[in-house]
Image 1 (cartoon, rainbow, N blue to C red):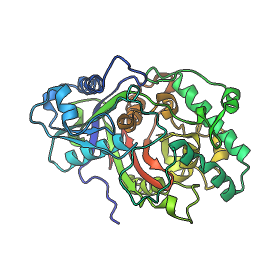
Image 2: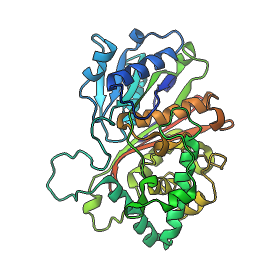
Image 3: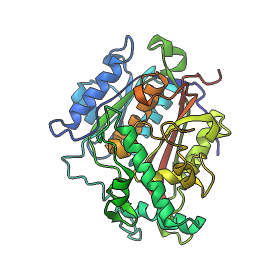
Image 4: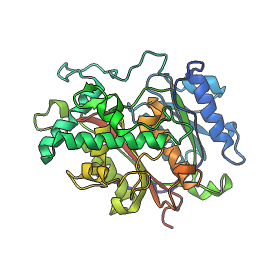
Length: 397
Protein backbone atom coordinates (compact mmCIF):
# COMPACT_ATOMS: atom_id res chain seq x y z
CA UNK A 1 0.00 0.00 0.00
CA UNK A 2 1.38 3.40 -0.96
CA UNK A 3 1.75 5.80 1.95
CA UNK A 4 2.78 9.33 0.98
CA UNK A 5 2.93 12.68 2.70
CA UNK A 6 1.09 15.50 0.96
CA UNK A 7 3.01 16.42 -2.20
CA UNK A 8 2.12 20.06 -1.62
CA UNK A 9 2.14 20.76 2.15
CA UNK A 10 -0.70 22.65 3.79
CA UNK A 11 -1.10 24.60 7.01
CA UNK A 12 -3.82 25.70 9.40
CA UNK A 13 -3.93 29.50 9.61
CA UNK A 14 -7.02 30.01 11.76
CA UNK A 15 -9.09 27.94 14.18
CA UNK A 16 -11.97 28.19 16.60
CA UNK A 17 -13.83 26.05 19.09
CA UNK A 18 -17.08 26.84 20.88
CA UNK A 19 -17.58 25.91 24.49
CA UNK A 20 -18.79 22.32 24.73
CA UNK A 21 -21.71 21.53 26.99
CA UNK A 22 -25.47 21.81 27.39
CA UNK A 23 -26.53 24.55 24.99
CA UNK A 24 -30.28 24.28 25.53
CA UNK A 25 -30.88 27.78 24.12
CA UNK A 26 -28.91 27.23 20.90
CA UNK A 27 -29.34 25.02 17.86
CA UNK A 28 -26.72 23.50 15.56
CA UNK A 29 -27.01 26.52 13.25
CA UNK A 30 -25.87 28.78 16.10
CA UNK A 31 -22.89 26.55 16.89
CA UNK A 32 -21.79 26.32 13.25
CA UNK A 33 -22.14 30.08 12.75
CA UNK A 34 -20.03 30.79 15.84
CA UNK A 35 -17.35 28.27 14.87
CA UNK A 36 -17.15 29.45 11.25
CA UNK A 37 -17.04 33.19 11.98
CA UNK A 38 -14.57 32.81 14.85
CA UNK A 39 -12.23 30.74 12.66
CA UNK A 40 -12.40 33.37 9.90
CA UNK A 41 -11.97 36.12 12.49
CA UNK A 42 -8.80 34.48 13.77
CA UNK A 43 -7.30 34.54 10.26
CA UNK A 44 -5.61 37.81 9.26
CA UNK A 45 -7.20 39.55 6.27
CA UNK A 46 -9.70 36.76 5.58
CA UNK A 47 -13.43 37.17 5.03
CA UNK A 48 -15.95 34.33 4.91
CA UNK A 49 -16.46 34.94 1.20
CA UNK A 50 -12.73 34.28 0.64
CA UNK A 51 -13.17 30.64 1.66
CA UNK A 52 -13.33 28.67 -1.59
CA UNK A 53 -14.78 25.39 -0.28
CA UNK A 54 -16.10 23.82 2.91
CA UNK A 55 -16.05 20.33 4.42
CA UNK A 56 -18.68 19.82 7.09
CA UNK A 57 -18.56 17.01 9.64
CA UNK A 58 -21.88 16.03 11.20
CA UNK A 59 -23.27 12.62 12.07
CA UNK A 60 -26.70 13.35 13.50
CA UNK A 61 -27.45 17.08 13.34
CA UNK A 62 -27.77 17.56 9.60
CA UNK A 63 -27.65 16.18 6.09
CA UNK A 64 -25.92 17.52 2.95
CA UNK A 65 -24.03 20.78 2.53
CA UNK A 66 -27.26 22.67 3.10
CA UNK A 67 -26.73 22.14 6.83
CA UNK A 68 -23.98 24.75 6.52
CA UNK A 69 -25.05 26.95 3.60
CA UNK A 70 -28.34 27.96 5.20
CA UNK A 71 -27.07 29.32 8.54
CA UNK A 72 -23.98 30.92 6.95
CA UNK A 73 -25.99 32.30 4.02
CA UNK A 74 -23.49 30.83 1.57
CA UNK A 75 -24.42 31.04 -2.08
CA UNK A 76 -23.12 28.63 -4.69
CA UNK A 77 -20.12 27.47 -2.68
CA UNK A 78 -18.94 23.84 -2.74
CA UNK A 79 -19.93 22.38 0.64
CA UNK A 80 -19.41 18.68 1.28
CA UNK A 81 -20.83 16.88 4.30
CA UNK A 82 -18.76 13.91 5.49
CA UNK A 83 -19.43 11.28 8.15
CA UNK A 84 -17.14 8.63 9.70
CA UNK A 85 -18.99 8.00 12.95
CA UNK A 86 -17.01 9.57 15.83
CA UNK A 87 -14.03 10.23 13.52
CA UNK A 88 -16.14 12.64 11.46
CA UNK A 89 -14.32 15.85 12.49
CA UNK A 90 -10.95 14.45 11.48
CA UNK A 91 -12.37 13.25 8.17
CA UNK A 92 -13.67 16.74 7.37
CA UNK A 93 -10.21 18.14 8.09
CA UNK A 94 -8.44 15.44 6.06
CA UNK A 95 -10.53 16.16 2.98
CA UNK A 96 -10.11 19.93 3.27
CA UNK A 97 -6.33 19.40 3.37
CA UNK A 98 -6.43 17.14 0.31
CA UNK A 99 -8.45 19.72 -1.60
CA UNK A 100 -5.97 22.53 -0.93
CA UNK A 101 -2.91 20.33 -1.49
CA UNK A 102 -4.26 19.25 -4.86
CA UNK A 103 -4.42 22.83 -6.02
CA UNK A 104 -8.17 22.75 -6.52
CA UNK A 105 -8.75 25.49 -3.92
CA UNK A 106 -6.64 28.18 -2.25
CA UNK A 107 -8.58 28.38 1.02
CA UNK A 108 -10.77 25.67 2.58
CA UNK A 109 -12.65 25.37 5.84
CA UNK A 110 -13.10 22.16 7.81
CA UNK A 111 -15.95 22.54 10.25
CA UNK A 112 -17.77 20.16 12.56
CA UNK A 113 -20.80 20.59 14.74
CA UNK A 114 -23.33 18.53 16.60
CA UNK A 115 -26.38 19.27 18.76
CA UNK A 116 -27.15 16.25 20.90
CA UNK A 117 -28.43 17.24 24.32
CA UNK A 118 -32.01 17.96 23.26
CA UNK A 119 -32.09 15.30 20.53
CA UNK A 120 -32.52 12.39 22.92
CA UNK A 121 -29.10 10.98 22.04
CA UNK A 122 -27.71 9.09 25.03
CA UNK A 123 -24.51 7.71 23.54
CA UNK A 124 -25.56 4.19 24.53
CA UNK A 125 -26.70 3.06 21.09
CA UNK A 126 -25.23 3.84 17.68
CA UNK A 127 -27.30 4.20 14.52
CA UNK A 128 -26.70 1.07 12.45
CA UNK A 129 -26.97 0.41 8.76
CA UNK A 130 -28.82 -2.61 7.37
CA UNK A 131 -26.71 -5.77 7.73
CA UNK A 132 -27.02 -9.54 7.63
CA UNK A 133 -28.21 -9.66 11.22
CA UNK A 134 -25.15 -11.39 12.64
CA UNK A 135 -23.42 -8.44 14.42
CA UNK A 136 -24.37 -8.45 18.10
CA UNK A 137 -26.31 -5.43 19.31
CA UNK A 138 -24.49 -3.99 22.32
CA UNK A 139 -24.27 -0.53 23.86
CA UNK A 140 -21.04 1.39 23.37
CA UNK A 141 -20.05 1.07 27.09
CA UNK A 142 -20.67 -2.69 26.91
CA UNK A 143 -18.46 -3.10 23.84
CA UNK A 144 -15.58 -1.07 25.28
CA UNK A 145 -15.93 -2.71 28.72
CA UNK A 146 -14.80 -5.98 27.16
CA UNK A 147 -11.31 -4.53 26.74
CA UNK A 148 -10.71 -4.95 30.48
CA UNK A 149 -11.07 -8.74 30.94
CA UNK A 150 -9.53 -9.38 27.50
CA UNK A 151 -6.45 -7.26 28.23
CA UNK A 152 -6.10 -8.83 31.68
CA UNK A 153 -6.23 -12.33 30.21
CA UNK A 154 -3.87 -11.59 27.31
CA UNK A 155 -1.12 -9.98 29.39
CA UNK A 156 -1.66 -11.64 32.76
CA UNK A 157 -2.50 -8.38 34.51
CA UNK A 158 -4.94 -8.39 37.47
CA UNK A 159 -8.16 -6.57 36.55
CA UNK A 160 -7.73 -4.53 39.74
CA UNK A 161 -4.53 -3.02 38.31
CA UNK A 162 -6.28 -2.18 35.05
CA UNK A 163 -9.12 -0.55 36.97
CA UNK A 164 -6.51 1.45 38.90
CA UNK A 165 -5.05 2.71 35.61
CA UNK A 166 -8.55 3.53 34.32
CA UNK A 167 -9.19 5.55 37.47
CA UNK A 168 -5.91 7.43 36.95
CA UNK A 169 -6.91 8.28 33.36
CA UNK A 170 -10.31 9.62 34.47
CA UNK A 171 -8.67 11.58 37.30
CA UNK A 172 -6.02 13.02 34.93
CA UNK A 173 -8.44 14.08 32.22
CA UNK A 174 -10.88 15.69 34.65
CA UNK A 175 -7.99 17.57 36.30
CA UNK A 176 -6.88 18.82 32.87
CA UNK A 177 -10.42 19.83 31.92
CA UNK A 178 -10.85 21.73 35.17
CA UNK A 179 -8.44 24.40 33.87
CA UNK A 180 -9.92 24.58 30.36
CA UNK A 181 -12.63 27.24 29.94
CA UNK A 182 -14.16 25.45 26.90
CA UNK A 183 -14.67 22.10 28.68
CA UNK A 184 -18.11 20.86 29.70
CA UNK A 185 -17.03 19.35 33.03
CA UNK A 186 -14.63 21.67 34.85
CA UNK A 187 -14.20 19.95 38.16
CA UNK A 188 -11.38 17.96 39.70
CA UNK A 189 -12.69 14.55 40.78
CA UNK A 190 -10.79 12.54 43.40
CA UNK A 191 -9.54 9.04 42.64
CA UNK A 192 -11.56 7.80 45.61
CA UNK A 193 -14.79 9.14 44.11
CA UNK A 194 -13.99 7.71 40.67
CA UNK A 195 -13.05 4.30 42.04
CA UNK A 196 -16.17 4.08 44.22
CA UNK A 197 -18.66 4.91 41.44
CA UNK A 198 -21.33 2.33 40.64
CA UNK A 199 -20.51 0.02 37.69
CA UNK A 200 -22.33 0.86 34.47
CA UNK A 201 -21.04 -1.89 32.16
CA UNK A 202 -18.52 -4.50 33.26
CA UNK A 203 -15.72 -2.60 35.03
CA UNK A 204 -16.82 0.76 33.57
CA UNK A 205 -18.49 3.29 35.86
CA UNK A 206 -19.93 6.64 34.81
CA UNK A 207 -16.46 8.22 35.33
CA UNK A 208 -14.97 5.80 32.79
CA UNK A 209 -17.33 7.08 30.05
CA UNK A 210 -17.33 10.34 28.11
CA UNK A 211 -20.47 12.43 28.21
CA UNK A 212 -22.90 13.81 25.65
CA UNK A 213 -22.44 17.45 24.65
CA UNK A 214 -23.22 20.13 22.07
CA UNK A 215 -20.40 21.98 20.32
CA UNK A 216 -18.66 23.09 17.15
CA UNK A 217 -15.12 23.73 15.88
CA UNK A 218 -13.53 24.89 12.62
CA UNK A 219 -10.15 25.22 10.89
CA UNK A 220 -8.95 27.32 7.93
CA UNK A 221 -6.52 25.47 5.62
CA UNK A 222 -4.22 27.02 2.98
CA UNK A 223 -1.09 25.98 1.09
CA UNK A 224 1.95 26.03 3.37
CA UNK A 225 3.71 28.52 1.08
CA UNK A 226 0.83 30.97 1.57
CA UNK A 227 0.47 30.53 5.33
CA UNK A 228 2.35 33.65 6.46
CA UNK A 229 -0.05 35.82 4.45
CA UNK A 230 -2.70 34.92 7.03
CA UNK A 231 -0.88 34.35 10.31
CA UNK A 232 2.50 34.61 12.00
CA UNK A 233 1.98 31.20 13.62
CA UNK A 234 0.85 28.61 11.07
CA UNK A 235 0.38 25.02 12.15
CA UNK A 236 1.76 22.73 9.48
CA UNK A 237 0.23 19.35 8.63
CA UNK A 238 2.84 16.57 8.55
CA UNK A 239 0.57 13.52 8.28
CA UNK A 240 -3.03 12.57 7.56
CA UNK A 241 -3.96 8.90 7.92
CA UNK A 242 -7.20 6.97 8.06
CA UNK A 243 -7.80 3.26 8.59
CA UNK A 244 -11.23 1.70 8.16
CA UNK A 245 -11.20 -1.90 9.34
CA UNK A 246 -13.14 -4.77 7.85
CA UNK A 247 -15.73 -4.51 10.62
CA UNK A 248 -15.63 -8.25 11.22
CA UNK A 249 -13.93 -8.26 14.61
CA UNK A 250 -17.04 -9.00 16.63
CA UNK A 251 -17.78 -12.00 14.43
CA UNK A 252 -14.19 -13.25 14.48
CA UNK A 253 -13.52 -15.95 17.09
CA UNK A 254 -9.82 -14.97 17.05
CA UNK A 255 -10.55 -11.35 18.01
CA UNK A 256 -10.42 -10.84 21.78
CA UNK A 257 -11.12 -7.05 22.21
CA UNK A 258 -7.67 -6.36 23.72
CA UNK A 259 -6.35 -4.34 20.77
CA UNK A 260 -7.53 -1.61 18.38
CA UNK A 261 -5.83 -2.61 15.12
CA UNK A 262 -7.17 0.29 13.07
CA UNK A 263 -5.55 2.76 15.48
CA UNK A 264 -2.20 0.99 15.05
CA UNK A 265 -2.52 0.96 11.26
CA UNK A 266 -3.43 4.64 11.03
CA UNK A 267 -0.58 5.58 13.39
CA UNK A 268 1.96 3.62 11.36
CA UNK A 269 0.78 5.30 8.16
CA UNK A 270 1.03 8.72 9.81
CA UNK A 271 4.51 8.06 11.19
CA UNK A 272 5.72 6.99 7.75
CA UNK A 273 4.41 10.24 6.26
CA UNK A 274 5.97 12.41 8.98
CA UNK A 275 9.27 10.50 9.13
CA UNK A 276 8.74 9.59 12.77
CA UNK A 277 10.60 6.46 13.85
CA UNK A 278 10.30 6.68 17.66
CA UNK A 279 6.90 8.16 18.53
CA UNK A 280 7.36 7.84 22.30
CA UNK A 281 10.39 10.15 22.05
CA UNK A 282 9.45 12.36 19.08
CA UNK A 283 5.79 13.17 19.82
CA UNK A 284 5.57 16.03 22.32
CA UNK A 285 1.87 15.76 23.18
CA UNK A 286 -1.20 13.86 22.00
CA UNK A 287 -4.96 14.21 21.96
CA UNK A 288 -6.56 10.76 21.70
CA UNK A 289 -10.10 9.39 21.60
CA UNK A 290 -10.79 8.68 25.28
CA UNK A 291 -14.43 7.73 24.73
CA UNK A 292 -13.86 5.28 27.60
CA UNK A 293 -10.87 5.07 29.94
CA UNK A 294 -9.66 1.61 28.80
CA UNK A 295 -9.66 2.98 25.24
CA UNK A 296 -7.04 5.57 26.17
CA UNK A 297 -4.98 2.92 27.98
CA UNK A 298 -4.85 0.59 24.95
CA UNK A 299 -4.26 3.49 22.55
CA UNK A 300 -0.96 4.22 24.32
CA UNK A 301 0.24 0.87 22.93
CA UNK A 302 -1.37 1.17 19.49
CA UNK A 303 0.28 4.59 19.03
CA UNK A 304 3.69 3.28 20.13
CA UNK A 305 3.83 5.32 23.34
CA UNK A 306 4.03 2.19 25.54
CA UNK A 307 5.20 -1.38 25.07
CA UNK A 308 2.54 -4.05 24.55
CA UNK A 309 1.01 -5.08 27.86
CA UNK A 310 2.75 -2.25 29.76
CA UNK A 311 0.61 0.84 29.17
CA UNK A 312 -1.21 0.44 32.48
CA UNK A 313 2.16 0.75 34.24
CA UNK A 314 3.09 3.89 32.27
CA UNK A 315 -0.31 5.40 33.08
CA UNK A 316 0.13 4.79 36.81
CA UNK A 317 3.71 6.13 36.67
CA UNK A 318 2.37 9.46 35.38
CA UNK A 319 4.02 9.29 31.93
CA UNK A 320 0.91 10.78 30.28
CA UNK A 321 0.05 13.33 32.98
CA UNK A 322 0.16 17.06 32.27
CA UNK A 323 3.69 17.22 33.70
CA UNK A 324 4.68 13.79 32.38
CA UNK A 325 7.08 12.84 29.60
CA UNK A 326 4.29 12.72 26.98
CA UNK A 327 1.14 14.63 28.03
CA UNK A 328 -2.05 13.03 26.68
CA UNK A 329 -5.44 14.74 26.53
CA UNK A 330 -4.03 17.82 28.15
CA UNK A 331 -7.18 19.76 27.23
CA UNK A 332 -9.35 17.34 29.27
CA UNK A 333 -10.25 14.97 26.44
CA UNK A 334 -13.69 13.58 25.73
CA UNK A 335 -13.94 12.87 29.46
CA UNK A 336 -14.12 16.62 30.21
CA UNK A 337 -15.50 17.94 26.92
CA UNK A 338 -18.19 15.39 26.18
CA UNK A 339 -18.59 14.23 22.62
CA UNK A 340 -20.51 16.29 20.03
CA UNK A 341 -19.60 13.74 17.37
CA UNK A 342 -18.92 15.89 14.30
CA UNK A 343 -16.87 18.39 16.30
CA UNK A 344 -14.63 16.20 18.49
CA UNK A 345 -11.81 15.60 15.98
CA UNK A 346 -11.52 19.32 15.28
CA UNK A 347 -11.71 20.10 19.01
CA UNK A 348 -8.65 17.90 19.53
CA UNK A 349 -6.84 19.74 16.74
CA UNK A 350 -7.80 23.08 18.33
CA UNK A 351 -5.74 22.17 21.41
CA UNK A 352 -2.74 21.74 19.09
CA UNK A 353 -3.47 25.17 17.61
CA UNK A 354 -3.37 26.68 21.11
CA UNK A 355 -0.33 24.69 22.26
CA UNK A 356 1.86 25.44 19.25
CA UNK A 357 0.76 29.08 19.34
CA UNK A 358 1.74 29.37 23.00
CA UNK A 359 -1.86 30.17 24.02
CA UNK A 360 -2.74 27.17 26.20
CA UNK A 361 -2.30 29.00 29.50
CA UNK A 362 -1.88 26.69 32.49
CA UNK A 363 -1.89 23.70 30.13
CA UNK A 364 0.99 24.99 27.99
CA UNK A 365 3.63 22.43 27.00
CA UNK A 366 7.16 23.86 26.67
CA UNK A 367 8.49 23.95 23.08
CA UNK A 368 6.47 21.13 21.47
CA UNK A 369 7.93 19.58 18.31
CA UNK A 370 5.22 17.23 17.00
CA UNK A 371 1.60 16.96 18.14
CA UNK A 372 -0.58 13.92 17.41
CA UNK A 373 -4.38 13.73 17.18
CA UNK A 374 -6.09 10.32 17.14
CA UNK A 375 -9.85 10.28 16.59
CA UNK A 376 -11.89 7.10 16.10
CA UNK A 377 -15.40 5.89 15.43
CA UNK A 378 -17.05 2.55 16.06
CA UNK A 379 -16.09 -0.07 18.61
CA UNK A 380 -13.31 -2.63 19.21
CA UNK A 381 -13.10 -4.89 16.16
CA UNK A 382 -15.26 -2.52 14.12
CA UNK A 383 -13.35 0.76 13.92
CA UNK A 384 -12.45 3.74 11.78
CA UNK A 385 -9.36 5.54 13.12
CA UNK A 386 -7.79 8.80 11.95
CA UNK A 387 -4.34 10.08 12.96
CA UNK A 388 -3.12 13.60 12.21
CA UNK A 389 0.36 14.93 13.00
CA UNK A 390 1.08 18.66 13.15
CA UNK A 391 3.97 20.96 14.03
CA UNK A 392 4.94 24.62 13.86
CA UNK A 393 7.96 23.46 11.84
CA UNK A 394 7.21 23.27 8.11
CA UNK A 395 7.64 19.84 6.48
CA UNK A 396 11.14 19.39 5.09
CA UNK A 397 12.61 22.24 7.15
